[in-house]
Length: 124
Length: 388
Ligand SMILES: [Zn+2]
Image 1 (tube, helix red, strand yellow):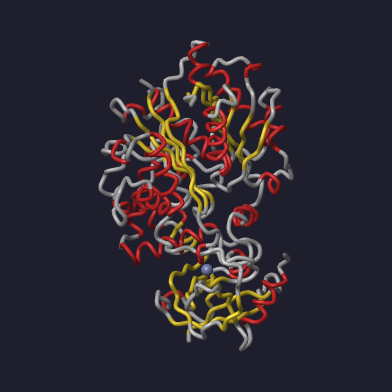
Image 2 (cartoon, chains in turn yellow, brown; image 1 turned 90 degrees about the vertical axis):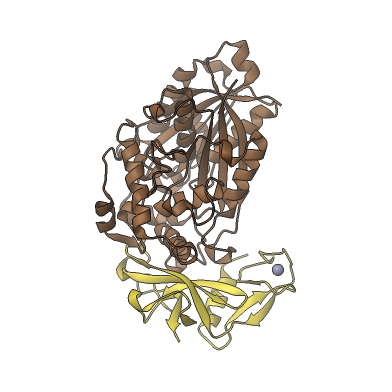
């Protein structure tokens, strides 16, 4: 298993085809996966990711590793999108505006330090 | 089942020692433990050794045999890696091997060399304990992950930065007399509150330092201790391990650490005790919030109650349940792969009565150690008991 399916997932996140993996029990997870992390099911199907997510927790990072060193401080959050949660960088918001329960959309943007695509949330 | 005794313990001073190699650090701790135990070199049947980031920090893998050699031993050796719980897991494996009757004398412990790297590289190296695809690439750092947990805890149970500051104050106060501790100075709540943010709501004084150091223990079977007349008054009465999803985003909740709960329940069952029997604890306070999560997972406080334990004086040295009398990771330091072993070294000395802070305890019988890997995707808990 390579990171290819992860890269494809990130690429799809930036389009209308954003998806997550769903098992027969309705648990959500993200690729690369061969099994559902919650029940072990091996039948995982691509299911459209809900457009709106909810911030569950967040932090403003002031000390970063080299891949984000040029961006401090920046906001990182975990947001729930129905059956699945995503971790991403929260853009277009400052710490004072954010609270848990904030409605966000998920997409991608370039990490200016590395040129890689990174998962980003934006307030809706 | 063979009972396991702690026959000897050893530590290096914890702190910034960038010029010292890993093998030098581990050799110091191992030789101290061997001398403390008074066990002949030829008796050692194996080394269980913890290390996390040596392949990055020293470009050195395969550290098991290297460290057996450094310790002056000629025996099989295995490195255990479970992020910040590496040495705790190493000790657990040694305990299991002795209990199974496979061995009578083992060395266990760990080492980490960290300060030879610049801070951004240490931050990056520590981040490999998180999920590379779903956390690290999304800008999560190790302090950032605990910050996400702290925010979730505050939302669910309440609590404040000031409550966390009291944990830092307590652990620094405990470290002052500890000659092995990195920060032997008291701090105030105000100082902690005023320190710069690392990952909000966590500030610099909520975080443990970057540390070099090593820990080592000589573990022997009850039979061996008796046959050789060893002075080994502390037994490892219980050991337990728990696991959880790797990434925070896949966990049930961010304000609890069920892997530690599972490890504690297993260790308590193993020892035939309950949380109410615990006299003293060393817990994995890599961040102040981590001490709170640990106390609650260990069943020592109800969920939502751990946050105020230090402020209310319940876990201070004169409280009813002193926690981190060593200074904890916060003030004693956190050489990642050595920490779990060091907690057991400190606890053994506290129970033997020859720890510099032993006078905080009156006739202690049972101590627990709690060692967590990453954001507690793995956890190991040990119960130490003064033998009858
Ligand atoms: Zn499932």
